Length: 87
Image 1 (spheres, rainbow, N blue to C red):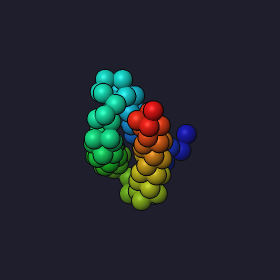
Image 2: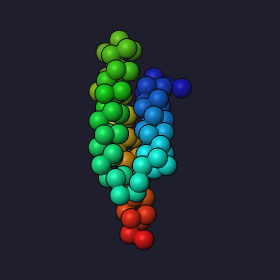
Image 3: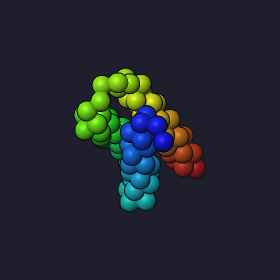
Image 4: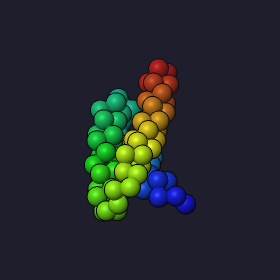
């Protein structure tokens, strides 16, 4: 596993878990309010992981891959929210 994927995977898994928890625990009318919170938490986690790695080589690339994955996951969650709320 490359270092890029190794640093992005924990953030992606955390975002997926947070989306599932919000979807199961919170009422559907409040899902929109939690998506930016999940995104903010993912960005903080991304920075913590990168600082903990203490490697400057490829930092921007690793952060770009992580942020892109988080954005894609949140887009999918937004589309799912729209589909649920439209019914």
